[in-house]
Image 1 (tube, helix red, strand yellow):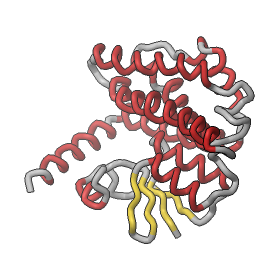
Image 2 (cartoon, one colour):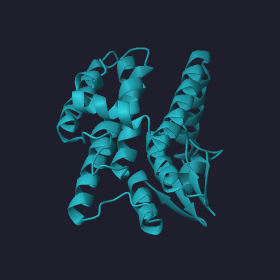
Image 3 (cartoon, one colour):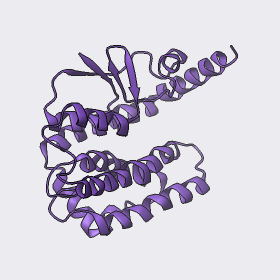
Length: 237
């Protein structure tokens, strides 16, 4: 059985989990690695991030790569296009969700918990998010799906990305742009009713509440400090 090393709050992991749920895949176990964030994890998985798909000891990192692999070995139901042009469109929307929204939000998220915010970082990364939500508003489907009138890999990338925008961006002092983008707002309201998106969002919200509690009680700061110290010590070798 394959294993997906994942975490509730990881938007990149959420992208792959939603795809697994939508395809009804039952022979991939989903678990959080006990040594995540340690030098041992980075030794085992050099990129040091989740998700990682463990295929009988062969580690495959990167959410987009994993998503494409799963689509190849579990082609039904299809989450790419019926034609090469449809597939290109799906991948374009997924790229907006993954690179232009999710990646900027991931880098910006540290400012949501910083004692002293770096306004330059917020303006730079937050500005990219605002710009690309506007671009997405012109390209998003008008029928409750990202494109092609059905659930695709584009939806799997957009759901965690928009979750981050709605729930993390305001904590940096920036306004949530989704309500002012009519087409994105309509899509966001509709896709949350999809059972696979809803299941993924429950996990993301659970992870967010756990993280907020860790920040409130100080355990997150201690964990990060310990991880940084351990990593610095390991890099001396």
